[in-house]
Image (tube, rainbow, N blue to C red; front, side):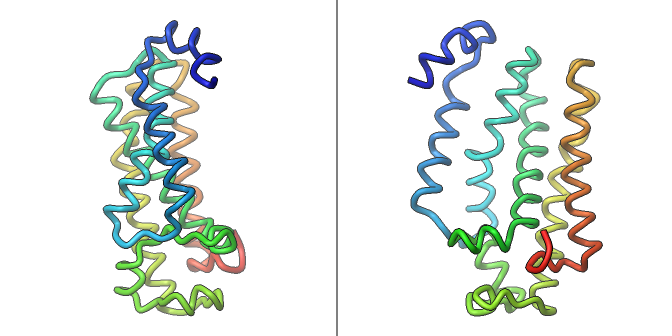
Length: 181
């Protein structure tokens, strides 16, 4: 039914089915996956949950090409990772952890510490790495801003700047996202 409602827009902007199908993969994954073992698994989730949104914007802006899509994927992945950084507490409350278990182990932050919402040096180390990773994705995608049509440059720039501002705020509060989002 959703695709029937979107048919005119899909046709008008020549949007392929792939971004929509990718989003459905992410929706299904949200129903069954609550933990991710590796960075690669989190990035794979971003491929389906965040990146299709950016690609849809490119199609709607009539500016989709392979180069812009790759930059958009970087921005969208960075935004998703920034969201995971700021939302550790609400995600935990929903029974989800998007911080890769391998990174938690590397930082010596275990599941019982999550359960206690423990802010300590291990959590700070973990979040420092996560924030740096998200920032790297956003900065790699930032050249997209000047490659967008003039009418989309400001909004694209605001998305990048907003993601970086979230990460700066996480740093400013010394990575303690347990007590304040």
